[in-house]
Length: 143
Ligand SMILES: CC(C)(COP(=O)(O)OP(=O)(O)OC[C@H]1O[C@@H](n2cnc3c(N)ncnc32)[C@H](O)[C@@H]1OP(=O)(O)O)[C@@H](O)C(=O)NCCC(=O)NCCS
Image (cartoon, rainbow, N blue to C red; front, side):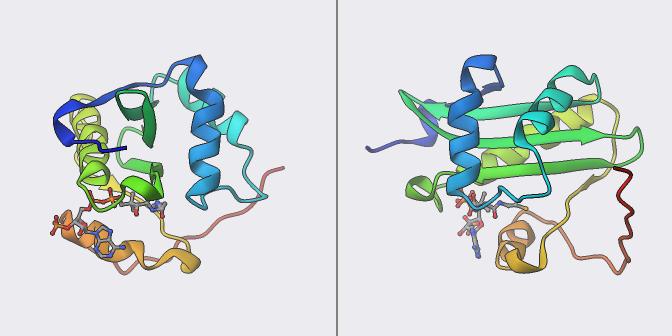
């Protein structure tokens, strides 16, 4: 199916999107055993500091981004474009929507974490003006 950016609609996640969203994430290799996608969706939707945008054109549901902030840094998660529609500007459009939302929240910085297994996406983010910063990220599981 041919799609164009002209009829590409970016809107907030609605409950009816849940299954398609999880299928998209699965297809894009974003599902990992230590994250529960339903919990991630529920948390993002209920919190005033986060939201999920989905992208569709016509009947095709093919893009997503989750975005949130802690008042200081904004974070992007679950950026995905269905593999059949990649390299057509949809990823850029989704990031742009997330950045606009962050700016509206008064957040000055947009950040993301890249898994070691997904460094090829670094080139995409660099095209969008993102830079790699020399920081060490640390974590401890609380559950
Ligand atoms: C990353 C992803 C969202 C990019 O979406 P996309 O729709 O293909 O990206 P766009 O078409 O908007 O690309 C924007 C620019 O980045 C470039 N680009 C996209 N993917 C690239 C890649 N893997 N390597 C180098 N450049 C890339 C495009 O050519 C375009 O360049 P331009 O500025 O010359 O036009 C998509 O590849 C994807 O869903 N990947 C799997 C999931 C994933 O890894 N998500 C990120 C988790 S952190």
